[in-house]
Image (cartoon, rainbow, N blue to C red):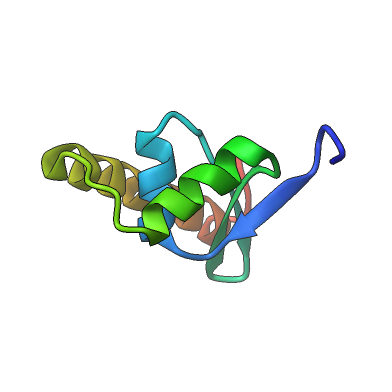
Length: 86
């Protein structure tokens, strides 16, 4: 696998789970659509499988991770509406 290869993720819940597990996504915007990008490696794939297997996580921690991602999305969309980052 290439070292800098990244996988796009369009599911905020999966991304919140992965963020909770220690992976920090890069957010990219195309129009009004935000995509989360994470490293394409075995650790990310393993944790994505854990998410799809319904692994238990502390619910308040998950909700906090989800809210943080939503706030980052809104900030990125706001920058896009204003014409780019400063």
